[in-house]
Length: 434
Length: 132
Image 1 (cartoon, rainbow over the protein chains, first blue to last red):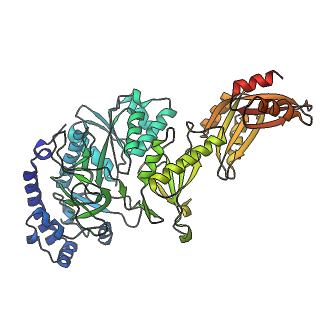
Image 2 (tube, rainbow over the protein chains, first blue to last red):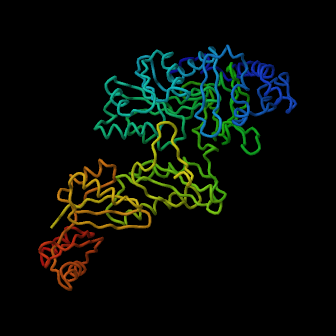
Image 3 (spheres, rainbow over the protein chains, first blue to last red):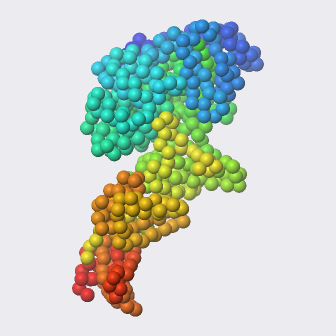
């Protein structure tokens, strides 16, 4: 369903005019209010007056995650503190967390974008939405909560964790829509099975999943196990949280809320803008954000953009599934390895659990070209015959070799050896952490 | 005769076999026979338990990957050549391939031993052994 046809179906020419006007206004704001941007503009020899067309965007400097850290906590803010009504933050696994302040206007915009997001996937005011994204500093929980309320649906704010209670409520309150990370969807299924419950027998029909990389095979697996349509969503704390883009039920790319976010794809090495269709790093400029507008944020997410109109009627550009995150990308013997490639191999083999962990050795340089992949052995693939187990190991090794282009050491491990996380799945572990 | 065997996947690490045995001890399950096949990284623990289904259940509950298979058991005389003449040669002569086997000496009748085996053809192997 299209909640806001005026913007979601806007003719490209009108949309681009709207984007340009909003960009010009925003560039002026950051130039005047944020010393970091004034300095960065100066270094590039650019002023707000130089932005005459959308293609002038490339004249502007990039903003990186590092710039957020360097200006921690409020150095990128463009409004006085008394305008801020809420502050979110990233998990901050490396160094200082990313701080995300919101004005009341930002909260209103975000709520509306999230209502659009839910509607795009097929949720309506008649749905019962169980929101299993973490509530608190993480943007996922409250982002979906406000969007679901804006939509008029019933929200069950379960947050993450306490999986048995999640399943009890899901059954008894007749939840129709689940919002959670893809790995948590699999945990829900495993726990439900342990409780003797088949989620396909419940009212659950739809899921909104994101916040971590996942593959098309994993989607198929989740849809089959939970008996739902699983919609891919995308967002980042630095930009707004969830709501940047979402799939429609055609599942052919995530429609970017382009009236709020101006996107480009660049070559991550040179910073050069790439044409539509080419794979590269997604760069986002916020067009309406008040508290902390961001110019040309380098997301590190590898995607491609598709400008073709979608069958759903939206004119908004679609972005591909994130095929890799340069943070997660491993370089093994000079070859780029993405965890999503490993996942696709596992899911293609009947009965193999998609639970895996990549062990790298960053401490010992001489061993740094070894890639070890731990794979959990499920009852479906376990055999009492050693030959069959060795064949499984060999098959995994061969398929990994052909997909990754380098050889990996496969280690079969007992189930539940690999930690299940209820937030973002940790797929790459350094040997020293084991 | 046919007998049910419980197998468990186990990582080749100190304490893993102990963890399996502890589960069985806690649930009062005795082990009638046991064998372990191993590689450098993992092993398969195969066991004959008084009640295979119960054993499977308690191990599965404890989080192990486990399964039940039908295999064959055969009594052999505890004498030189006992295994060769009562099991291995007759099966070889019939063209049946042994996938694995293990043996134990039955108490108190020490003149007999029991072998447990899996072949590529359960029915045919069963016939061969019965006909002896």
